[in-house]
Length: 103
Image 1 (cartoon, rainbow, N blue to C red):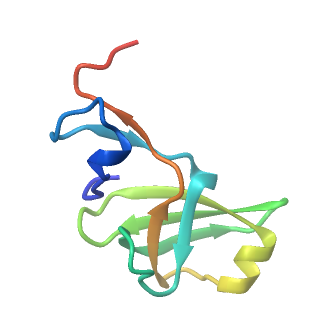
Image 2 (image 1 turned 90 degrees about the vertical axis):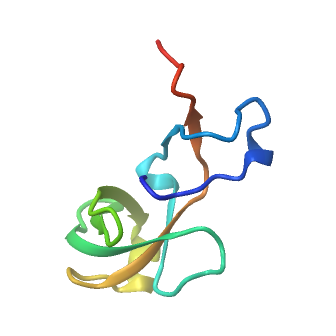
C-alpha cells in the first residue's frame, strides 16, 4: 500500500526507513469519510458481492495502486458501495517487512 505510513512505535525493531507492508484483504477497513487516522483515498473499481464476503477492487487516488478488499455482507450493505464511489482505506492489521527481509 504505497503512501501509507506506519507508526514506528508499533515496530521497535525497525529503523525509520522505507519498508514493505502487507495487509490481508479482509483486514482492511473501508469508510465513506476520513476517520481521522491514517488512510488512503481510493475509488471503487469493481464489486463482486457473491458469497458471505463481498470482494471490492479499489484504485488509490495518489499512487494509482490496485487494492483488493473484502467486506462482510453486512458491512457491504451498510456502505452500499458501487463502482466509482470514493472511500478511505485503512488497515486494521499490518505486517511489515524490512528491505533486508528474505525467505
